[in-house]
Every structure is written in structure tokens, then in C-alpha cells.
Figure 1 (tube, each protein chain N blue to C red):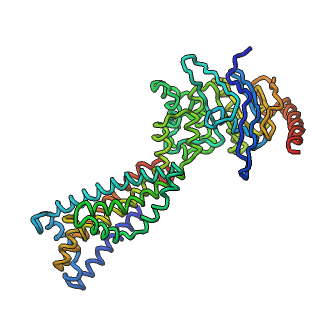
Figure 2 (figure 1 turned 60 degrees about the horizontal axis):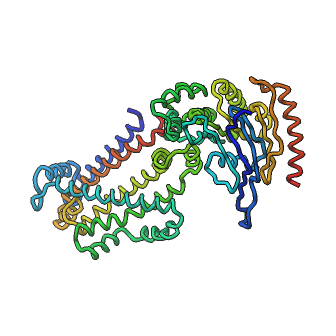
Figure 3 (figure 1 turned 90 degrees about the vertical axis):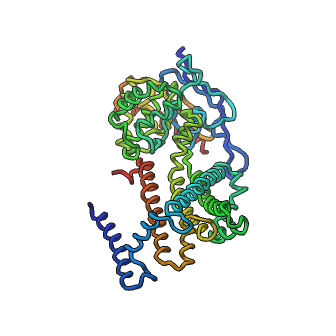
Length: 258
Length: 256
């Protein structure tokens, strides 16, 4: 059995109900496992609790019950390294591109001697070599998101969380970024948990797809995408897979909303 | 030199030309000309004035008072403002004190302090700190409220410790508020210090206004006013504005 990078067991999270009466479960008894080095996507409609799930894994939101275990690759490091790419870049606009990456390196207590090498390597990887001294606000939205991706990769995380990272970009830029992400993964292979509402994006990028229903968030289907990489966005096998999954999704959602 | 610069210089030139013209049409007892005022200022620096104190001494005293009260008011204001902005309970408890303090007219605060402390150094300085602090606090309160929670979450996600969070995430977001408080508080401080010196404190530029005012010496009164204005303009536009440009270089508006 491949070693698991992330194991989630019986995770539950309640929010106060709108109107202030009682609580409702956003996530209820959710379990999932992600093998080390694999690219897993969670697909679900907006508001199904996908971002909440990532925030819980990242440790920035508490949960009510259940367990989240992230295995640290480096035995010496007891705390697992978690990289996070958000919907918006969330860069520190007052720091240069380089210093934004160093911020994450410093936060993760990575040796100062390695910083310059890491910055160079990962900026080059996302295609931003030469932008070290630029300020984020002088870059386009797509470039800012590339910096955010470089920042998350640079800490060489045990798990990389990506929360609809391309949804704020125009479709042409987003498409280019997806293809570029595929290329990056040929060079660096962290375990990735990618969250999206787009089945097309999920089947194109991932090896494993988890489909999530709403109220409460529950995984109702798990499948492996067996199409080998590198994949073409226009691959008819991807379209067929997407079509089947969409059908299944609607069947489940109709029940959920009834 | 570009057009904007040329216009600015022209405007400054016009100001002095009008002053000079006004002085020609009036008498030195009513409006002394710019040259006469310049000579009076230089004379005040060159030779000791009343009580054997030269202008250096008075300028020094005034600047020391401004620096001291300004530093204290900024520190207190930032402390109170942030505490209130970050702790909901403190805001509920003390939020109403700020408008109360802001509403007391400055002039009355100075008189109040004279009544409390007499014509003493402590009274004057207390009046300044008491009036300026709430302005700083109200700015910092707004700054703390405007902190971007998404960026703080980002820092937590990357496991930034508290020190790093404050240094690289929070402080920079507060900068615009700190600076606007800084500017405003500085402007208030020097005005109130001048007021306090005029009415209560011994020595300083304001003290010299009132000294020469009582002698009905127009040239000296104007000379001290002109000196005061020149120093404060230099500090505000020369020092603070430069500093601001440095700190905000990352903003596209300041891009060159």
C-alpha cells in the first residue's frame, strides 16, 4: 500500500445556522485518504464546504470532531509542511515578489542559506524568472497567482492545498495556467489536494477525483482518472469522463436539494 | 524643470511679491515687508534677545516640546487605538471616550490645564498630549478594523509566528493609518504647543509671540510667526513627506 500523505477520518464541522437558531453541519463524518505524491481533486458545487475543509486541514479553522493527519516526509520535521494557494493570490503587496516567497520560507523555519536558491528555482518554475525585485501590484492577476503558486511550492510542502486557484482568472489565462501546472508537476511532485467546482478542471488535472455533495458535505464518489499524463485539454476521453460525471452529479444533487 | 514645478515656484514668487507690494502701500507698523522680516529673524539668531536668550534657544525649546509631546501622544494613541481595534470588549468599554475627548475644544483644553497645573511646563505638555492622543487613537482604531483577515489567514496557513505576522503582515497594513495619524497629530501638536507657549509656558517661539505682542512690536511678532511657519513647513514637507514616499514605494500610485 502506498503511504498516505493525508488521512481524514470522520471529520465534522458545524456552523451556527443563519438567523442564530441552532447549528447546521457543513461537513459531516467526512473521510478521505490521499496517497503520497498523488494529485487529488475535490469537486463540489459552490458553498458545499470545500474551502472550509481546506482551512481545517491547514489548521486555520477549528473542527468539531474527527481527525486530520498529515504525514511529514522529513522524519526530522515533526510538523508537516502545508502549502496553500488561495482563490486570490493573497500576496503581501508591500514586499517584493522575492520577499513574498521568503516570507513563507521564514514562516516555515527553512534555513536562510537556502532561500535564494529556492526563490530562484521556484520563480523560474512558474515562469517568473527576473521578476524578483518587482512589487506584486505591478504584475497582472495571472502573474500574481503564479507568485502565490511559487510561494506554496517553495516550502516543498508535504501537502499542497489549492482552493480554486484559477477561478478568479479569465478563461484563457486559467487554461494556460492549468497546462503550466501540469508542466511544473513534471519537475516537482508534492501531494496536492485541489478543490474546484469544475469537473472539467478536475478530470484534466487529477489522478484522483472526489465528488462532494452539499448539506452536509459528503464524498459520494471516488474515482481514479486513468488517462496518462501529459494530457491534452481537448482529449475526447476527458470529455466523455466529464459528461458521465456531470450526469451522476445532477442525480445526487437533485436528491440533496429536494 | 516641468510645468508643474514652474507653476509652483511662480506661485511662491507671487506670494512674496504681493507681500512686498502690500508692505510698500502700508507702513512698517502694520505690515513690514519680507526683507525687513528676514533681517529681523537673522538678527534674532545673531544676538541675544530679551532675557539674554537668542532665537536658537527658543527654537530648540519649542522643537523639544513638540518632539516630546508628539512621541508620547503617538505612542499612547497607537497603543489605545490598536488595543480597542483588536479587542472587542475594550472597544465597547472605551469607545465612547474618544468622541468625548475629541469634542473638547483645543483652546479650552489649554486653559483647563493652566487651571489644573498653573503656568507650569507639565500643564502645557499635558494639554498637548491630552488633545492629540484621541486623534491618533481614532485613526489606529480604524486601521485595526481594516486589517485584511485573508492575509492574516494566509500567514497562519504558512505557520508564521507572531513576530513575523506583526512585522510583515500587520504593521505594513497599518502604515497608511499610522502615517495619516502621524501627519495629523504632528500638525495638531505644533499648533497646540504654540498655543500653550503663547498662553502659559515660559520660553519657546509661542512665548516670543506673546512677549512682542505685549510690546506692540509688529516686525518681531511677524518675524517669529514667519520663522515658526518656515520650520514647520520644512518638517512636514521635507521630512515627513520624504519618509512617506519611501515607505509607500510599493504602491502603484507612487511608481515612477
